[in-house]
Image 1 (spheres, rainbow, N blue to C red):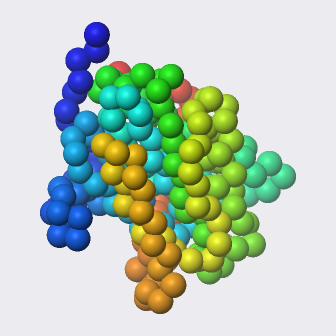
Image 2: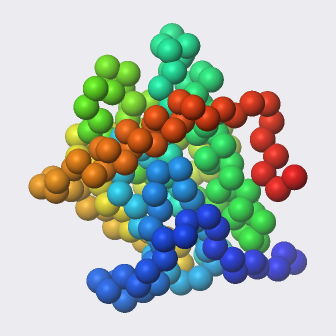
Image 3: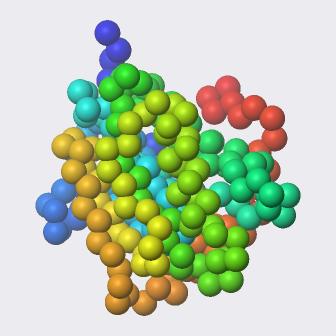
Length: 204
């Protein structure tokens, strides 16, 4: 029987969420977090997407936050080379959940984001590509999507409670969106200059 690991991974932004009276981790673009503890995982999404994945039996769960980079070569194949970045973001979260004791056959997912909020990126349908990718990836991996809130024009704030599977989503209709837009634009710029070459060994 697999021993549960109780470590949480990557996101260093831990705080106490007064509204939910719970420990919380804030997930920023390019980050993910996995936990077996009773806490809340929080992120704010514009064009990016997040997958909230949990083992419905052991209640080990996690969240990622990512986007596919813009790529001139991908214009005729929107899920071509850039999909490797999304694949990496999904696999690193799933691998960590399995390492902590989750069983692949028990995994379920809820997915959010992909809004059209990045001015200047709309010609390439960034949010739409991200949403299409995450659904296709989960279908290929045979992980059931039990809830989704994708596309639209509003940023979202997502609260995920891995212990119960509850997700609360708030559409940010009246918020000042410059922070979200600039954060995602900066993340997209970082993706342009980073490369994933060949097979990625996570824990060589």
